[in-house]
Image 1 (cartoon, rainbow, N blue to C red):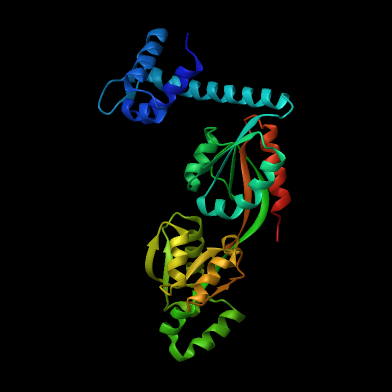
Image 2 (cartoon, rainbow, N blue to C red):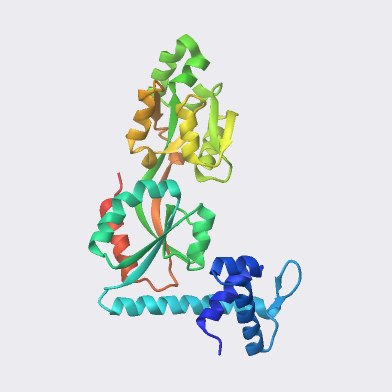
Length: 315
């Protein structure tokens, strides 16, 4: 008889399409995994994999993958529901968010949650937007914290707070570009942070596809300028670190900049900079919690949403 363990092993093997990699991910031997798969094929009387290089799923395997994921989701939801019935004394909550956003949010929220609910097993998944939304869709995480809109279907959202992307302008860039006119340009930026003033300055940007980069590109298009891109990076913290060292102007979320100690340390090194609000709807968004509306929402999940709403509010 096929059990949940066999289904879990099959799903991992189907995702990896490589028994060696799947066995490592499951912390079992390749032979053990092969035996489980062979047992399932014997039980169903069909081949689930084409033993080709690379490995592929048969039509039967493709259909089983869909069913297996659904059955495993139902299993998890049943355990969550029964744990809730057990006076909320035990449970599990998995949360997905970006590494940088986690650094800002989790130190405020998780200690309060842990104090109220010490027996809830917390799991954190850090990744990019695509990885997190896929995890939410497949039930790998219960909640995702990110910016609206979410790009996957069947997701309900709870707005948490407003967010704004700021313009980061190091003094070193202004001095190198404008020389004696630096003070004048700074005053103009304080009155109206017009990107057109900075058309001759170097910019350090995230790679295309990132939300902050998309906002930057829309701003450049609106200002009718083609920016001088000095560098393109993947990590927003690296972009900021290079910017405050005077390598270029960049864009940075206000929530991340709220902890000004990080930026103040650069000022102490003689590297001053200013953060400007562009006062443009393009730079404004909403941080939200997303959850799969078709999945059972445990009490642990509901309580986390309540706590984060209490501790992080709209400006």
